[in-house]
Length: 145
Image (cartoon, rainbow, N blue to C red; front, side, top):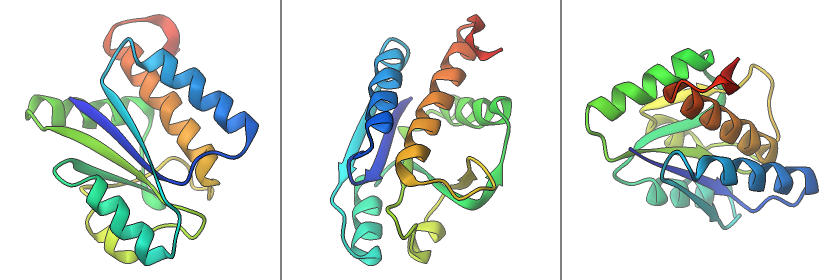
C-alpha cells in the first residue's frame, strides 16, 4: 500500500528538517512513501489543496480532536486497509490554523498523535517516526520496543 503525506508548508525549523531526513531515509527501505509539501494560504485554500492532493486515497486527517491509538492500533488500521487492497493512505497535516471543517468531514479516519496540540512541523516528524515503527513491527524487527 502506498503512503502519501500531504503537509502544508516546508519545515523551517532545523530539528524538524533533520528529523524529516532521518525518517524518510529509514522508511525508504520498507515502503513506498510520497511526501507532498503544499503551498500555505488561507485555511480554505489549504484545505482545498489537501483534499485535491489526497484524492483517491484513504484520508487520515491528523487533528488533536481525533482518535488516540497506540502503535499496535495504528499498525492494525493500516494493515486492514492494506488487506482491503486500498490504493493507499494519505496523511493530511494542516498549517498553523489547523484543518477547516471540510477537511475533517472528508476524513476516513480522524487521528490524534497526542491530546496536545502539536506544531505542524513536529507532527510531521512524529508521524514519520510512527510509520517507521509500524514498518519495523510488520517485519518483526526490534526497533518497536
